[in-house]
Length: 268
Image 1 (cartoon, rainbow, N blue to C red):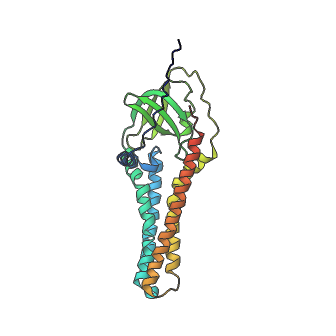
Image 2: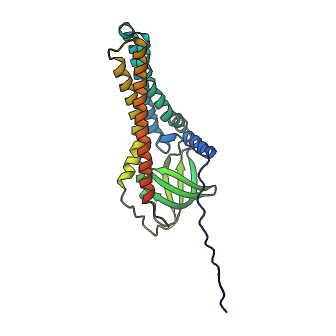
Image 3: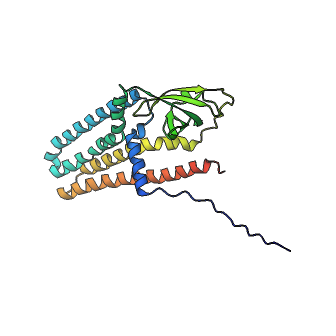
């Protein structure tokens, strides 16, 4: 007697795509943690903040100069159109540097907290320029920290307990302590070239957008075009178009590079 066995194929569950609410909460947590400056030394972030303030002051001076010298030659509408472009670098600096700068001011006087847990993995490279990554299983769940590669040299490849001292706001790891026997050395694979580009793109994009907007807007504003209303509209439109083009190219490059990074991840 033949017994026919039916084997039901079990399909692996696909990870659900994040909803708009989850994406919004992730973005809010990213900004609250310092944004692009999360994980960096508060003193370094403060220096970046002071430099950004100086750049913003320079932009304000240029705006004032445009509003003083351009109206007699081109009219007020063209002068305002030329000055508006210089508000974009200030806005971008406030958006990218501001959150981290505020947290660095808090961390300068705050006491670092201790984080203890089981080492899950470490890498000397991450999506943040100059920082590696450390995964730790704590009582509250899996935590990921951005760490200077020099502090990861002593981290082994086996699962041991680690103790981190972390600033409460920027989550900057000041020290890494390893508890237990270092049985397995950690082997670092070569860093793919695409990772370097992934690290640089978030910093180059706002610079490119601001430069495109300023150059496009002011180049048209200083050109001999009439009538004045059309001149002003063209200046703003060209600046906005160039800035939008840079953003679009950056977005496409980021998607392409992230796809390359995902292709490098071993599929189990």
